[in-house]
Image (cartoon, rainbow, N blue to C red):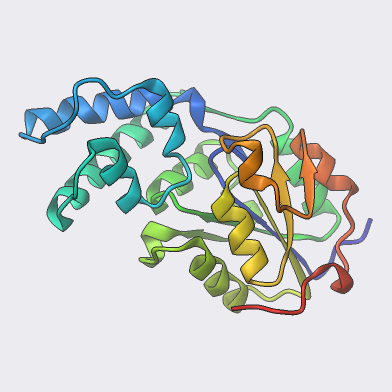
Length: 230
C-alpha cells in the first residue's frame, strides 16, 4: 500500500510505549527524592492514581497527585527529578514498547509514510524511549508539550502539522486528549483500546483498534480528513 504524503502522528505512553512497565517505579522513586527536599506529598498515592495521570500535561499531573496547587518552582524541580528517574530506568533496560510496534512502524515507513510523535510527556523522556529502542531516525519530528511549552495537545498537533510537510494525516492515541487533538485539527482519529485510557475516552475516535498492527489496514485519503481545523 503506497503511503507517500501520509503523516502518521502517534501518542507515546499507552500507544507505542507500555508506560505501565515503568510507571510506578518511576514515580515512587521521584516521590522519595521530593520528600527529601521537603515536598508535601500524600503518603498513600495508589498505583491506580499513578496510572490515571499518564497522558496528562505535567501541570495537571502534579496538581492531581499532590492534591494541591503547585508553584512554578516546585513543578520545575518535580519535572527534572521525574525525567532523571525515567531516563535512568529506560537506560537500565526497564520499560518496553508494545509487542507489535516495531513491525507496524517499519511497515508504514516501507510504504512511504512519514512518522511523528505528539506527546504530553517531557521531551527528554520521549527522546530516550526512541533512542533506547533505536527508533529515533524513523521519526520526522518528536513533539512534546514540555518541549514546546503548550498546555494542550490540540495546540501541539497544530504546530506539528504546520512544520512537517504532508498531504493527509491521522492521529493515533489512547486518551481523550489524543482524539480531541486529532478531531480539532481536522484529522482522522484512531483510538487504541489497549492503552491507558478508558473506553469512554476514545469513544469518539473514527476507528478503534485492539492491537497497533491493525492500523496497517487503514488507508488514509484526503476524503478521510475532516475539512475543518482550529
